[in-house]
Amino acid sequence: MKKRTFLKLSSAILTTAAIAPLQSCESTPRRRNWAGNITYLSDNLYEPATVEELRDIIVNNNRIKAQGTSHSFNGIDNSTFNFVRLLRMNQVVSLDETNMTVTVQAGMRYGELCKYLEAKGYALHNLASLPHISVGGSIATATHGSGDRNGNLSSVVRGMKIMNAAGEVIDASSNLSSTIVHLGALGVVTEVTLAIQPSFQVRQHVYQYLPMSVLKEHFDEIFSSGYSVSLFFDWASENINQVWVKKRVTADDPGDAPVDLFGAKAASKDLHPIETISAVNCTPQMGVSGPWHERLPHFKLDFTPSAGEELQAEYFVPRANAYDAIAAVYALREQVNPLIQISEVRSIAADDLLMSPCRNQDSIAIHFTWKKDWDGVSKVLPLIERALDKYNVRPHWGKLFTLDPKVLQERYRGLGDFKKLINRFDPEGKFRNEFLERNLG
Ligand SMILES: Cc1cc2nc3c(=O)[nH]c(=O)nc-3n(C[C@H](O)[C@H](O)[C@H](O)COP(=O)(O)OP(=O)(O)OC[C@H]3O[C@@H](n4cnc5c(N)ncnc54)[C@H](O)[C@@H]3O)c2cc1C
Image (cartoon, rainbow, N blue to C red; front, side, top):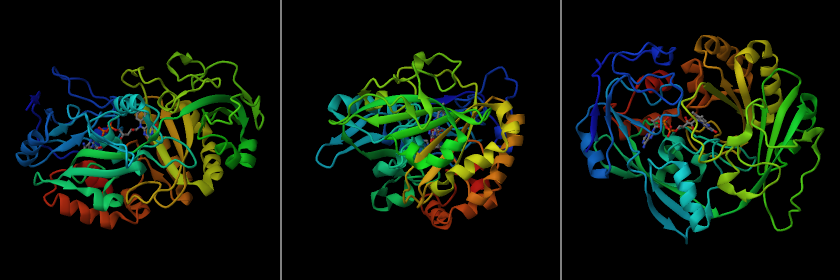
């Protein structure tokens, strides 16, 4: 078992300073999340390679927090005590071609899984915008891609094993809808079984400058024009900058692109969502077909984004309110635009998962990639949350938000049941942290 101990910190109560701007480094730099906006408040990190090693760690520590690849932005994976990371438990456990499932260790990254599945002739239904995130950490926060008929990545989980606070591996398969979006609160997920399907080809086209007025008229047609559709914009003008349409290639698919999409013009070359940036790291566009995992993410699998010079927030609203919600944020463009790098709107199909932001409702997610300016962003988020309040907005569990915990709790009707589960899996609060205590109450 490998235990890394760096600077030992005191076990002080964690405060919301966890999402404060960067602090100056001490002689031994502390670990941070991908974006660098969260400083981890303990340097005790365990990296087990087996379930037995994991059990020893769980049993011998009173407080511990599981981490995936640290791509969350809000301290959901922070702790003042100890961390356990499963990046050495990252193998495929089994491929079941009869039931069309693959079982993986929770530390596996989607990028590695995609390569494995494609080599066997299989695919996942959808992917997030980047492949570097772990399966266990992604399903914890209901990470999603886009597509009217595509649920989030958690929605295709068909089995899960979790190690509880007593070090017992619980097969959660009989209670999946309550446990999949686990927020890191139930224990350490060791294995996840995912639905697969035969590999498929996708081609994508990008359209530029879609007027907001046209979006209002044709919202549903635009979002149903592909298997996965994304809008990119910076709130600077009355146009959506880009519409990315990803279509599954079918036998009767002519393969050519319409020259426009409700007035938005087909791009004449590959584009980055931020047009001033080179498209060299973006997945091929212009209708060139390719395997699912090389088209569904916007960025190439072998492109490793450097530590992010960005902050992210994302809000879910019911699909029925999609245009009105976008218009409500648009009314704040003078505050939003100076801080924004790019926004993306995606659609996600309803699911039945207890803590999913898309539970029982087809949803639209309005995403913000902000400049790394927490002072500014922390002032704009409450304005956006207020503007979206009438649509019962729910924030992404892994991104920044300032919503009052009482309001957040009201938005999750299943929270009472989820808390009962937490008490069953973790009666002494071994896996709790400040994020969970503050937001779940
Ligand atoms: C550049 C970038 C792009 C992104 N794009 C998208 C996107 O397209 N769509 C989207 O929805 N989100 C997106 N995100 C957000 C990201 O996908 C989520 O925050 C996701 O949860 C991160 O997974 P992770 O493996 O890094 O987990 P972490 O951030 O390390 O942890 C997330 C949660 O999972 C828990 N956890 C992790 N592993 C385990 C385990 N084995 N057992 C128990 N609990 C565990 C942690 O305790 C924590 O609660 C993006 C983030 C970045 C930085």
